[in-house]
Amino acid sequence: MGEELRKTAHYRRASQVTGNATTLQRALDLCRDEYPAGAYPVYRFKNGVDAIVANHELRDGLDFLHIVTFEQGAGAAVIETIQRTGVNEEPAPHAKQYIQSQLYLLCRSDDIVFTSHNAPLRDSAASVLLNQLISTFSDEDPAASFILTATLDEARFRDLMNDGIQEIDLDVGAYRSTLEYLGNRGQIADGGLFSVLKSFVTNDVTEEEREAAEKIMARLTLRPGRDWDDLHVKELMAEMATNLVDDELDNGFTIVTKSGLRITRDSVRVSDDFHVDGNRRVVDVVQVRSALSVAYEQFQEMGVLDR
Image (cartoon, rainbow, N blue to C red; front, side, top):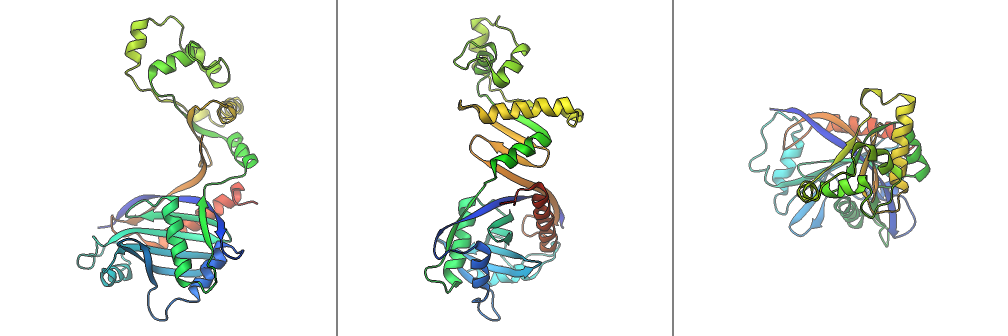
């Protein structure tokens, strides 16, 4: 039977690396014109795995793609499965083991919102999946290729931090390090966020306590709670987040804004969670498409898609 599943819509930007200058959407549209008539487009994804384009259509200026990867030689069973869209139906014989992953994607120009099912897809795998599609069906020579990146204008993500912080997660590692950081006995100078937190501990820590603390891993998470929209709380959380982003030291951290922006030392990612009917095998494609459309509109309102 179907159940309500939690999925995540991820935003990525497509950057072209080869081929004649174009956009990802234009390259995908050229592929759609070359699909075989009356048959699902099938192409090679990687060793032992093929991909099938279950759906590819343009609506309201957005391309929607549903791509399924599956074990080579199992195409017939997979096609039978994806044709039966009801999430409460039994799968086609033995089809469950054949499907590796499913990609649901909305694209306009070089902006992408996507989610996956059955198995998570890394940015690199999603890039290969789209590039192989373009290489197989595009009549352009050479065919364009792209990489998907989590990018966001710096000024915009700083504005989003000022709009409200959901949490700041400090990956400070061993608790002994935390004591040294906060007590200012380590190599990190007093300042920034740590100067704010120093008042929570004292320097009167014995060596025995330090040795014991070394065996304890600590994560320090700061949340504004119900008062997150209080002006002074927002300002303090935004200041803490800004100090972490600007800190030249290699401190691990994760900042999550109220708008869904996720900022780490290595990347800035924006996502939106949603719920759809489904099970481990399939999800309601109509609901997924609708949720991706809603997420795309939200990202537009946030200014994430502005260039």
